Length: 124
Image (cartoon, rainbow, N blue to C red; front, side, top):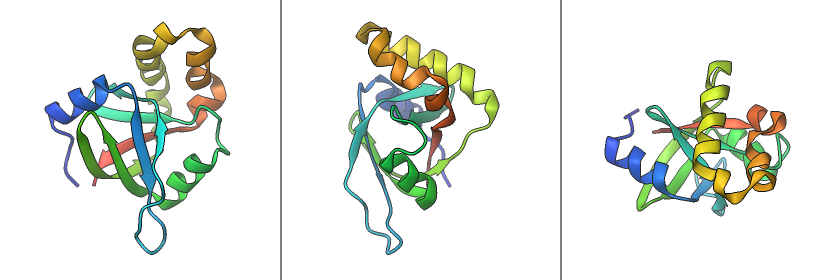
């Protein structure tokens, strides 16, 4: 598995939205879903604004593989549940990037349920 390049991290990190797709058991991609994503350090993270049971999140969690595209970057990826130590920095990154949308909008990705429904997106 390769790492994100600095250019990819910057481009994805600056993109307002990210399109995410998980792989079906036969290897084909499901339809892309548009969500918010953040860069924290050298990693990319996504959260389900509608919680743990949201359809795209559950499919990505189970598939563990998929594809993302944002900021002109498109990569095959793996989805990994991050450790608890990622919660605070990822929440801070969401606030920094999206607070200008207002507390009602950003609140959907910084509440306890959204923190629980976080995936680290790694190239692979």
